[in-house]
Length: 162
Length: 419
Image (cartoon, rainbow over all chains, first blue to last red; front, side):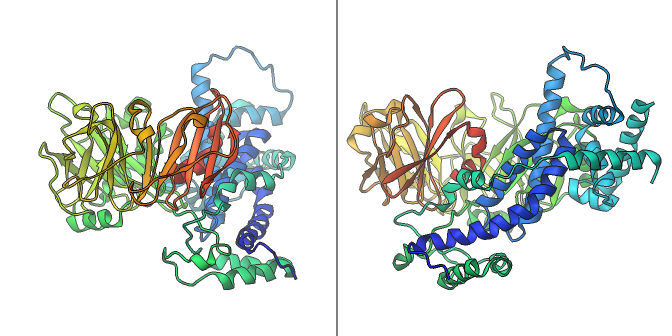
């Protein structure tokens, strides 16, 4: 039996216990998905932890923290992607990265060049195994958009692998 | 699945397995420690969330016992009644401003806003998801508003489409602003729910403006009037700062007739601060009752009548650096950018009496950058330490606690409830 002398901390301890469970349960899956969407372990961890901070600060008012976290991570990835494409447009590529050594590296490069929605749709379909409707719900778009995104992405990947 | 599909699946799985999650629960708790600070004189009971109780079942017995204690102590009343006897047992929660409920009710009753047609939703969806760049144009505590920028895509060049999404992960809503030109469209956050989009001003003032409800996704045209508001209700107007007209003179949106009007202000109003109060519509402005002196005045009726209050002498004489924040009757004001030379003056009774709140630790060689009064009465101060770092202080009663001295990009949660 734990009795806290400072009862003022009891409620926040409740938060920490419940939030800690939630954190441990969600961390791995969210980081993996963010890595696939961003291609960077460090940035993916940053985005996911920023999202956890957002969840923590609203813990009391969120009925379903899972979907909120999910959406926040996705939006965080989208934001990073937007920054990157802006940088790519502004900065000419100064250094040739050389030829990719393996098919995996080829795929990394092609995925990195895809527009965010195409990349996200590919990850959700081929890694997450989601249906078109589920992907549309995740990305907040019309179901009719998902198929063309995936097809375009596949065409691009196919071309690059040739 | 096609060969390529299988190849992608294998590749993605390999990359996913190689991901290394960084376990940093403590970092999250520290970054958000602001939410667990307890104000000394304003305590609102927390909601006992069902999720918390469900979570308790899964944890160890000792922890479950603590949770049970906490749940039992939480009053069932969800209202904002102060419970002084519970000061040490029920930490306050931060109440996120959600705009004026009365304004929302009046808007709803006016029938001004309408839902977009199915065609418009389809148009908006097409524009917003045609791999174009959409920009987050304005963010409230409840919702964000995106618009499709003309320069991003030819598809967007003929119309203004919008997308709103509530921040709790709710459904996205889309629509089209009828007759709007995307060129030079300006967006203003009216409160945490409503946004105003207006075309850029000309000599005659802006010709068109729209009100968008980011929560429901509805929108409607507003008209501009030069006559000041003469309403006598605390609920019919909200302040629209930096309106693109007449050198940024404050304007109010009249929910009853769908107009944007100049705010009627006291005769001695100066170029001082102008602040809106989210929940009640109280508006503060700086006044110059005498030469070289600044005071404040507030109105609860959309500018029809004003109550003048006197600032502490030391602040009143330093108009150029005045920094004011308010929420309801709570006002905080300071005028020095160097904290050790000038305390923050705090009033809990709309300026009738003042006390001081002094930071406990010294931010060093820094400039005061921001002052906020949270909905629950606490204060937030930020200092610019250098180009990349700011120090963040939050008050608990008359004391200040330094929370962070980092790049403010990590402070999104704090900004959101600083309003």
